[in-house]
Length: 221
Image (cartoon, rainbow, N blue to C red; front, side, top):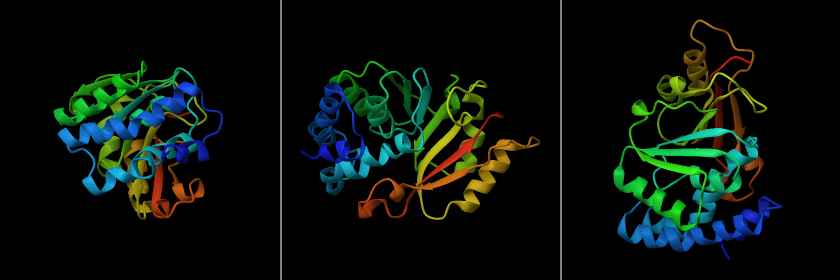
């Protein structure tokens, strides 16, 4: 089954987690026929291009139980839904400004029985909650994202890195990361700087050759 690509890189998943991952193909095909959230030609690559790509964040950061994560611009539920399956003891809020897309995320989460996900139709400017991390996939320039989500970052860290922003992006991110870090710090200096990781260091498929993770700390620690 296509979901085997997940167990290839993540051992020790429970039967429930494996079952939830295995249901995603049929669910997204069904929803995509009604609401196009994944390109028609890409739906056959769901597990590699969307699910596994989302789980690069799980390779970068093993969230501790009780961590609260906000997924901005989630679309049909990426990276939030795969991460919520992977970290059932963490809490996820998935938001998108396009109502029909959040309907897909909500429908998929309900269908596979995710209890740790809330889906909301809203703009990121409207979200007032506090979270340990904000995650996203190619939503906007990281420097602009920093200014948008700083208000949502909880001041107390419980994970191995300070609370902040984790983006899935592509290309050369050094300049973007530097500007994002400048905006994060403003008049302060953080001991932890931004981090760029190559997704290809975890996943061997050609698709990930140019894919990267950009992490920007948004609190001091």
